[in-house]
Amino acid sequence: MERTFALKGHVIYTPACGRLALHPDSYLVCEEGKVAGIFKTLPAHWQGVPVHDHGDKLILPGLIDLHVHASQYAYRGLGMDLELLDWLSANAFPEEAKFADPAYAQRAYGIFVKALTRSATTRACVFATLHRPATLHLMALLEEAGLPCLVGKVNMDRNSPDILRETTETSLAETRRWLEESVEFSLVRPILTPRFTPSCTDQLMAGLGQLQREFSVPMQSHLSENLSEIQWVRELCPGTSCYGEAYARFGLFGGPCPTVMAHCVWSGPEERALMKEQGVFVAHCPQSNMNLSSGIAPIKGYLQEGQQVGLGTDVAGGAHLSLFRAMTEAIQCSKLRWRLVDQDTPALTLPEVLYLATKGGGKFFGQVGSFEPGYDFDAIVLDDSALPTTWPCTLAQRLERLVYLSDGQPVAKYAAGRRLF
Ligand code: GUN
Ligand code: FE
Image (cartoon, rainbow, N blue to C red; front, side, top):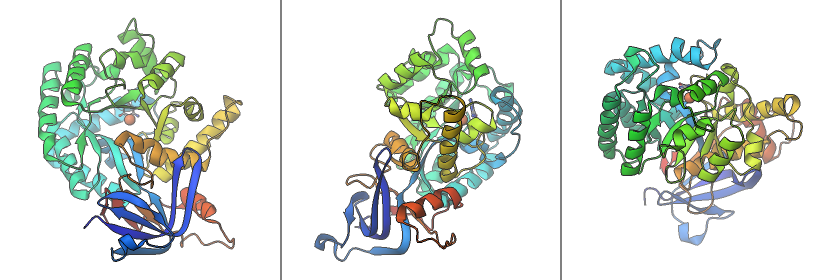
C-alpha cells in the first residue's frame, strides 16, 4: 500500500491538446503507483489512506523533457556564439571526451542528477556520451534518485575527433554489452542513441537497427536541426529523399522502433509525411534553436497535421533545465514564426504548451503526463505565494503566472507513485 495515497490541492492537467482541466480543492488519488481519479471529497473506498494536504498550492503532472544531454549540463550557459557544427567541435566534443575518466563523469553526472531531481521534470530522454561505464553510472544515479528516465549511450564512428570516436565494431560491441548490463535497472531504461547521421557510418546504423530489433529498445537522435547539417547529410547519403530517410532505411525511424527526434526545424513535406506515418516524436527545443541560430520549428503546424510532439531543453544547446522556460519560449518562438514566416498559422497557447510538456511528451513513455485514471502517477506541487498580486487571480491565471515567472522548482515531487521530496 506504500504507493497508495492522496494529494489535496488545486489539480490541473491537459486531457487533450489545448484543453485545460481545472479541479480546485480536490483529492488526486494514487493507487499502486497509478492515478485512480480526482474527487471533490475522498470516496469511502480510500478513507484512511495517507493524505498529503498541499493546501492552496497547484498540482500538475510531472514535466517531460524529451531531449537533454546530461554530459553537457556542467558547462551550460557557455560558448553560445556559434552555429551547430562549429559549436559541436568547439564545445560539445571536447567536453564529452572527458567522460572517458570515470571520476570526471561521476562529478559531472552528480551535478546533473541533483539539478534534475530538484526540477519540475519527472522523466527525460537523456543523451550520455559514447562511454559505457560512465553511461551506466548516470543510469544508476537516476535510478537511485527515482527518476524514470530513458538514457542512451551515444554512438559515433565518424566525423569527430580521435578522442571521441569508436570503431564501428567497438561501438556495436559496447552498445550490446551496455544493453545487456542495463537489465539491472528497473525505473531507468536504455534508449539507442546514434548521435546524428554525420557521426554514424551506414555499417554502424545497420548494426544498431539489428540491435533495436533484437532488444526491442526505443531510439533517439537529432533531425533537420541546422541548414549546414542538412546539406552535409545530403552529401553523405546520396539517394535519400530527406534526412529522415537516412534513419528510416535502417529501421530506425518510428513504426516498430519508437523514435524521438530532436528539433525537426527544417523538415520538408516528405520528411513530415514519413514522421507522421511512422509516429515519430518531435522533441521541440526552442531555446537551443535560438541559441544556435538554428531556426523556428513549425510546431503549431505539426500539431495541426497530427504529429507527435513534446518539449525538450537540449541542454547545453539550451542553457536551462526548466521546462517552464521551454513552454514560454515555445509560445514566444511561435509568435515570431507567425509574424515573420507564416501568417496563416497562429501562435501556440499556454494550454497547448502545457500539453506538450506533459501528455504530449509523456506518450513516448506510455501512459504518462496526465491525471486520467490508469496513468503513471507523476506529479509536481507548485507554490505561487512568492508571486503576490493585487489581482484576484483564477486558477488558470495562477498557472499562467507560474509558467512565465517561477524558477520552476516544485515544493513536492512524485514519480511513478513515489514521493521524491
Ligand atoms: N546534433 C548532434 N549532436 C548534437 C548535440 O550535442 N546538440 C545539438 N543541439 N545538436 C546535435
Ligand atoms: Fe541535442
